[in-house]
Image 1: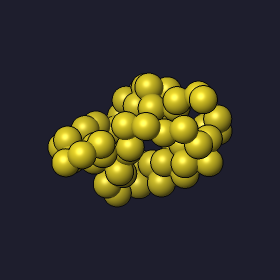
Image 2: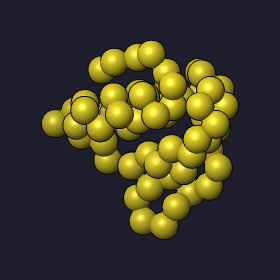
Image 3: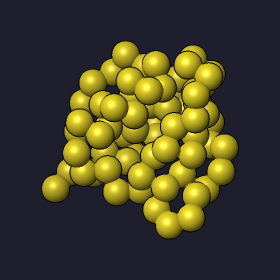
Image 4: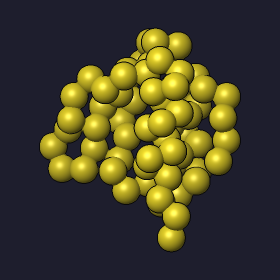
Length: 64
């Protein structure tokens, strides 16, 4: 199975998003300066739909 975690985090960083804190378990919380919203990012993103949902919440026009 493909893991989208590295690609998602790379795209978030390229678009000015930054890590707010490392959550408990396997989630991190990022902040998007585009939408002014926090974004929860799982460490094991195996669904492209989940990856696309994260991009949408961040306000980034990118699809996997």
